[in-house]
Structures are given as C-alpha cells and as structure tokens.
Length: 248
Ligand SMILES: NC(=O)c1ccc[n+]([C@@H]2O[C@H](COP(=O)([O-])OP(=O)(O)OC[C@H]3O[C@@H](n4cnc5c(N)ncnc54)[C@H](OP(=O)(O)O)[C@@H]3O)[C@@H](O)[C@H]2O)c1
Image 1 (cartoon, rainbow, N blue to C red):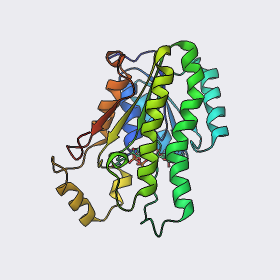
Image 2: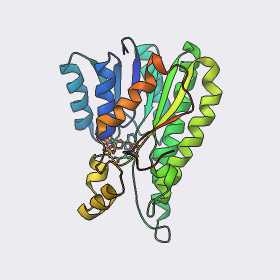
Image 3: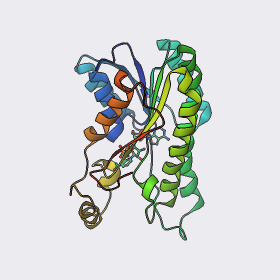
C-alpha cells in the first residue's frame, strides 16, 4: 500500500488509537496532521516519532466540538498543503454514569465531542474533497454504538449517531469519489480502558470470544484498508475489530 502524496488529518491523533493510526498512515507515506486538544506534549511526541522514522507530520491544536475552530484549522491545512485526502474522525471521550444519575453536561460533552465533532470535521473537509474528486473519511465508532452498554447511554447514543452520519454522508459523497466508512473497535488497551477497575476488565475479557483486549494496531490495520486504493468501492460500511464480541 502506498499513501505517498496523501494528506491525512487524524483527530485525537496524540494518544491511543489515534496515535497508532497516525504512525500507520505515515509508515505508508502519508503526510499526517496530528490533531489534539489538551496535550501538546503527546501530540509532539507522535510527530517526533513519525519524523524520526523519515515521515512527514505536524501537530494541529483544535477542539473538534467547536465548529469555528474546526473550520479555521481545516482552512489552514488546505492553505498549507493544498488539499486533504484523508480524514480520520477518532477524537472521543467518555463520561459514564447510569441514566438516572447522568448529568446534562455529561450527555452534552460526549455528544458534542464524539458526534458533533465528527459532523464538524466531515462538513469542513467535504468541499475540499469534492473539489479534488477524491477523499477517504473513516470514523472510529464503537461496539457500544451497536450493542448499547449500561452506564454509557451518552457514549452509545453518540457512537450510534455516527453510524447514521457515516451512511448518510457516504450516499451524498459517493459520486465525487469520496468514501465514508467506520471502524468499530471492541475493548482496546488504551488510556480510556486502562481507567477501568481490574475486575471490570476481567469481566469484559470473559465476554470476548478471543479472551483478550485488542491492540491499537488492530484498529489501525482496519483503517489502513479503508483508506487504501484497494477499498475504492467500499463506502458506508463498518469494520468490527472486537475479538468476536459482537458480530454485526
Ligand atoms: N479504547 C477503546 O477500547 C475504544 C473502543 C471503542 C472505540 N474507541 C474510540 O476510539 C477513539 C480513540 O479512543 P482512545 O481509547 O485512543 O482514547 P484516548 O487514549 O483517551 O485518546 C483520546 C484522544 O482524543 C483527543 N481528544 C479528546 N477530546 C478532543 C476534542 N474535543 N478535540 C480534539 N481532540 C480530542 C485526545 O487529545 P489530547 O491528547 O489533547 O487530550 C486524545 O488524542 C475514541 O473515539 C473512542 O471512543 C475506543
């Protein structure tokens, strides 16, 4: 697979799954623009790793939930690099709680970052991609968006919303050679899941047919396929990377 000459934006590329996606895209030759919101140190570390391996990368700070910041950042990127070929909507947060206790801001924060964030970024790249008659958009959703999960009504709603968003935009942009797909990870070993109590992790593992958490590289491999030339006829689809936990 050769992504040389491709310009890729990865939201939340500073850590976890996003970082692995950045490294994988860069390894195939893409210029990777690493978005972050609060941890410039982590974003710079991702950029340095790519540069040390001979790749091209730069860090861009913006909050995906803020439409104005997203539009300004995407405009800057298009001004600097002339185009955007690949958008990976990966930035995401959790604010878990049972529905009766869930605070309104826990709902709003998760919907704003995970769902509206993806909308803001897709909207901002749609014109430049249509103009170039080329684009690959991949959103990182979650198994929870398909199965639901007690204590994660906000997160499940946001991730399920990304499914409808992905399928609708896939239909809108297909004729312009812009594909729009998703990758739905199960439980992956990152900062997000490392915060879970040991007994919860053990319980989760017991429910996974492969009996282990996935790795960030398992997710990055699925993303690489969807941005490849080989996937040119694949749009509106989801690849489940979950060790058999859910079979969609
Ligand atoms: N880990 C899992 O098991 C799992 C499973 C299914 C789906 N996912 C999904 O995969 C994605 C990545 O998860 P992860 O586990 O790698 O998360 P993570 O380790 O917690 O990293 C989250 C990333 O998102 C960025 N971010 C958060 N809010 C943002 C905002 N408003 N604007 C821009 N960037 C923002 C963070 O930037 P800073 O470094 O600046 O804070 C960080 O780079 C998420 O969408 C998550 O829902 C994860």
